[in-house]
Image (cartoon, rainbow, N blue to C red; front, side, top):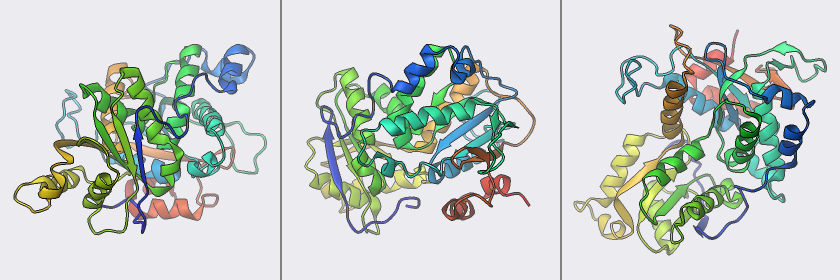
Length: 381
């Protein structure tokens, strides 16, 4: 599996629906939301009040850690899962998002979010999420980190995607609440939300979820808190979420199942979230089927703890499906006859157009690694 770091230790966090580590779906909102709603002279209030997205002029903004924004942008640029004429699931040889622009906000100023959560209850990240979405909606930005005047024109957002799970878990509720109260009609999506929506929409009773994620996410409560809140809403008190990091193994999925067994969770694994971009869905499915097949000896160990029809959820797959459906339903496609394109901005800490001169070396490494289409737009001669 690519995209997931190999670790020498596996950390296990088994969380029942009634347990939380942090409060990632909090009530009420953070103070900045209440301030914007109450103050009619606030610039953000004026920006958001009754805002309607423009299909022709707007861009799809993808916000978050560069390690998440860049591969997700690449997935959107390359996607061909639907027939563009009918909208049915059937590749037609044309990019699904033809004519669209994807604007990445590479949040170097705040990422990685796990560090921002250390020693904090999540308030800082929630406030940061609100402020970052406001910069995406604005039509102006700054020229460079040293520009104090601003006023540089930028594309407005017609749809927002919170690419990083931590950002979505802690901030999406506040953004959604703010937009509803201000009558702002710009949709806000996140892979975490889309994966949870798919899972809870089809679940008919209590179930077990496994999450495979980077080690730094284990202590953030990202998955356990969102899962617990959803279970509370649907009264699924016996459901459980087991969050694991990959360990040093040639077979990541088998190692995950071994650690799931070691966690002592009651009941079979029904859903598996692999929260890393760039995974091969077909290859993962094939591997799971092989481990559970009665033709292989591994099945003696795993068939008792993993459902035969365990569903694998991937962040890019889920948000691509949802974004396509939302844009068709809301009439947000521009219908330009052109290939999809991308642009980028950096938080430095003010929002500036992307430049290799100001981007962190780590960001440039991600661009050069597995993001050919994205890199061709971001890095200009």
